[in-house]
Amino acid sequence: MYEVIKYGSVGLAFIGIIYIVISSKNKNN
Image (cartoon, rainbow, N blue to C red):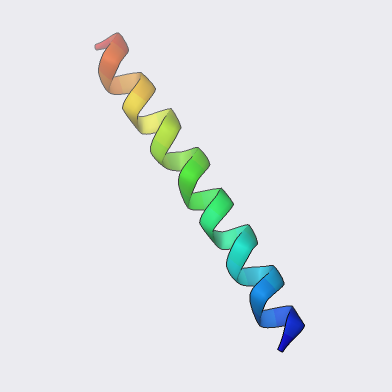
């Protein structure tokens, strides 16, 4: 059960980083 929470939080952080990178690229363009 703890592994699910751990991988879930890592996934959300990964998605958040990708979202920030994409949004920053859109601002630059």
